[in-house]
Image (cartoon, rainbow, N blue to C red; front, side):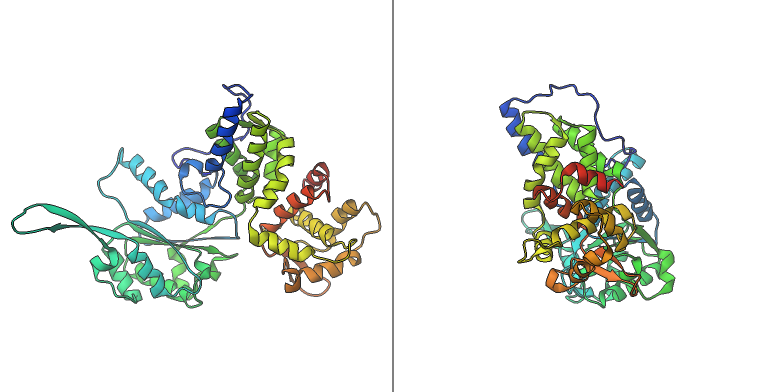
Length: 444
């Protein structure tokens, strides 16, 4: 999903001509179905810059910050926007940039280490694991009578004599000796409550001592304050990288890169439909792209059409994240055959997609029009579905929505940003709404 750091991303995403036959042989069809899974990776964060699409601004911001002594980075945004994928390509991006500057590979390699935060991790937990997972190659003589040398690998913690419970000062002294090092801490929001205060103190200490090392914090958050806090003076030492949802060109670029890799192409209509269904989340571009490509392969075609996108929804729904599926099923469960839960949550998903609020909020009034069209009724009012929206905020319905504000001015949003796109695919697969009508409603 990644764009080269030393070249601008290319747009648009639809290839208009192809040097290969548009029809596949049965054997080529099987090979394409298998190869598609290596290019589209909905469940795994992208780890190589070759498949990383878009995010040019964020990539250059991170690279510039690492190049400047005394700056540290906080990457934040909602779930599913590609924060881990961006963190994964920091090392190859830095390597490419440094080779470009030097005109070739350098004998000195900077240490770049990435670790995931586990639920409830403390400051010592994080740094102990970080130093234990980084290795030091040491030359060790194997005997007085044999002047040979063997390479012994020891952990960084062993090599530097770091304790089992590293303190802030101990960490500072250790990484001071690792010039140009970069330490990336993903899923930072899962750590213990005191973790952000300790890291804030560490960043303050590194800044005060002008240590040439970069701390990168990555986590789910609407603002940087949720991830770091404490010293107001560290604001000048932190580069804030907010990762919003991807725009349509960036999502389309994922399909273009995949098409070039697989020697296929996506029709303009199919590409646009996949992008709109993705709602700015690369996870769904990969998920729908994978199954739509396989549908085209089943037709022995190298051209993915809208009918392939439509046909793939049932399979894509079955391959969606279990947590997303469970939350949706809990929200719509009802013993009454005429219950409106499915249709109201679909109308909420449409309202969320068309309102274009930066944080995903929408008002009950935004639900009236899509629900009227879904129900084919002209007498829909807020009272028709108000009870349903209140219930959607309760844990008994999976807490699929959250509500903020005051009475008569409430606004809502989906707690899990991955849910609306799932609702769209499920609703089409279950024939609650026809795809052309859904497509029209989401383009309002």
